[in-house]
Structures are given as structure tokens and as C-alpha cells.
Amino acid sequence: MKPSIVYWLGDNLYLNITNKCSNQCYFCIRNFTNGIAGFKLKLDHEPSSKEVIRQLSNHINRKHWNEIVFCGFGEPTANLDCLLEVAKWISKHHSLTIRVDTNGHGYLLNPGREVVKEMHNAGVTSLSVSLNAPNEKLYNEICRPIFQEAFEAVLKFIKEAKKMLNVEITAVKVPELNVEEMKILAETLKVPLRIRNYIQFP
Image (cartoon, rainbow, N blue to C red; front, side, top):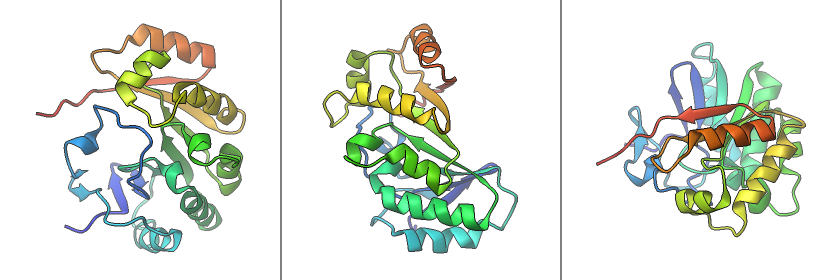
């Protein structure tokens, strides 16, 4: 089966633009399977913006999509220039909302770049930030980031992002998670919290 750069679930169209990730979350679906819903998401190469746009243009008019979501088997901001070019193309040719599902490491992955501002200017309308833990210790245990002080960097990213974009934080309901502590952190950050189901694999 050929890897999918563009795939769909329900009324959302998804863009799988990289398999690179700066976290190694123990619960991540990509540790256990090659894809979801009949789509193979393990890429054999890093797609260019032209390649993404070419495939996207084959599917974007097939139905009325609720939104376009940058979300696949990697961290979208690890392929930032591609993300920006594709978002600009979508904004220019279609009146669809654009969401990025991210681990919040955008500034760490792209030092010196104004990542949030660049995404906003490209037409991104919302972010879903996978925070997954209410404190640094648990974050490091669950998400196993490659960066030092990643948790604090994600909090900074969230605070910057909500100045320009609609932002929610998410957490997977793993056994270690204290949901009440997550709710308190979300209230402190003044952003909505969405708890995601923990899918256990054999």
C-alpha cells in the first residue's frame, strides 16, 4: 500500500506532511501500527509542498470538508516551510478553516523563527496542542521529548499562540494522568482542554 499524504476521517481532511517527531510518546499510535482507517501513514520520504498541494487538489473538492487538519504520523512544525506553503495555497483557493495538531515544539524545532506568527499569516486558524501532562516530570515520562525543558517551551508556545489563534490543549487519558490537575492547568492557561481516549494496543 502506498503511503498517504492526504487522508480523511469523517468530515475532516488531514495532511500527513512528515513522520519526524521531537517526542517519543509511549502511547503513540505509530509505535503499534502503520496507519489508521485504511490509510498507511508511515511515509517513505518527506513530501515537498508541491507534492502535498498536488495530492490535496485531487481531494479538496470531493465533498464539503469541515476543516483541513495538519496531523499525521509526525510533528507538522518539523516540516514548517511545507506547512506554511500549503496553508497559503489553501487560504488563497478555498474558504476552509485550517487547524494544526502539534506537540508545541515549534520554536524548539525552528530556532529564530516566529512560528506562531508565520502560521497565522499563512492562514492557519486554530491549534490543538498535545500537552498530555500537568507538570514537567510527568511530561518527560509520558512524552519522552528530545529537547531539554520541553514542557516549559510548550507552555510558552501556548501562551504565544492564543494571542493570534484559537487554541485548545489535549491530553490522552493514560493511567498516569490526573485529569483534575490537567483542568487546573488549562484554567491557568485560559484555554479549553480536550481529553482524548487512550487506545491500548496488544
